[in-house]
Image (cartoon, rainbow, N blue to C red; front, side, top):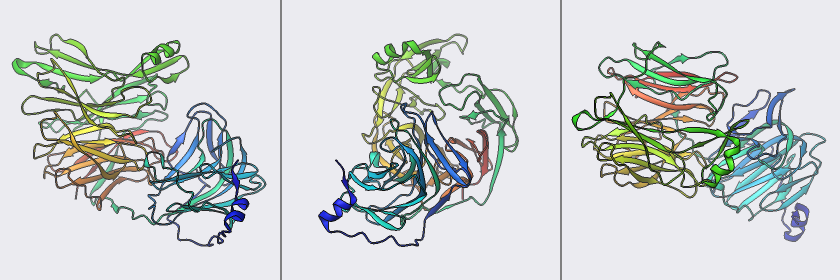
Length: 545
């Protein structure tokens, strides 16, 4: 049975000092407007502003049904970090049904706000309190292995030496709301704020920058734009999905929109598909490689698909989907006829945009993919590699981590000839990781953290030889960012991170792609949403300082 805070104080004789009334807060979020904060928002949950406070409701016990806001604070385990919220509980049926959660990259702890008590999930300490009669101010302070809780400025729980539970995936954040699938909860949130002494990376807007709306229609969900540049004509091509539900899996009712620009991305009009760019081989052979993406099946086939090892996702009523496999198409008669075959894979999921696949000078074809060896595992990254123009394919491992995913790989050949892949983690500190190859992609090594926070990545070699890394930034302030490397990816200039957009209204944004025009202008395309708006396609024309 968990110890109460009063019992622990009697055993230890410890006294918690009253919380200081005033702190220099790093970030404060008032809830009179719905906060543009990323997080985990499942079916059967909601959040809405009512009378100046945020009502968060989790009425579901289905898997993935939490409604939890996540604030990245990059707390230093050796220094003090403080999280505070003013909350009134309506109901809470189980652990994390209404909660505050803190982690510092090493350890974590969750505080559940039950109607009649407060409880630490891992330290198993409780404090009796009626949380439903009125608002209370809850302050969690962490440092090293120590944690204390104050309520309305007065000591409540002393967990000195008991802040020891490992942080999942190395996450480093302050979260609030409902973080449980199995519990339900409802609460009113007046404000949340935190103080973290971490050194935040300097960001600035590029001195020359122009935003352009590429495609925007009322109530039309538009996502995942491509971007191609015809080096001969300078024409830009993009295609993207538009319409259908707000879902990355369920595309029912959507279609493909194609647009072009003949003035460097300043204006866009409906257009044709980008000219085909097949990989080429001897005697005019043409080679295409692609992933199969999401394949829908009747819901009654779920059990059989899971038995085969697939990870099965709900799409809509009566329909499930799996993502598995890649296909190679070859033509030896100038594209008049094609033969198509599956590429054999030893794992059950493959995804890749193919946007930056490469054919090297010796003809080697490289197609980065990611997936999982079996359902439930973390994603790892590989490269599909062919040295005989598509006749056979190797699946070469790039990187994997037990602590997190390594997915959505982007590849580039640096000016030295070295190959570089940058990958998304998307959990923990949400840093991008990278690996390199010095043998035409036959082996990969040097797996390491770039230190760049955000996802997913896009890579481009600039005209001056530097590497440009653009990426979505799904943390406050939500937007699109970029950073450069002057040493072929050995390091990234994190002291000069360029903010292209910082006005996002949802974490469902990003997936940028960049090209550089002859005059040096960079065009970066992405999908985006402002507060209260609909996802649309936009681009930013800018110059890299």
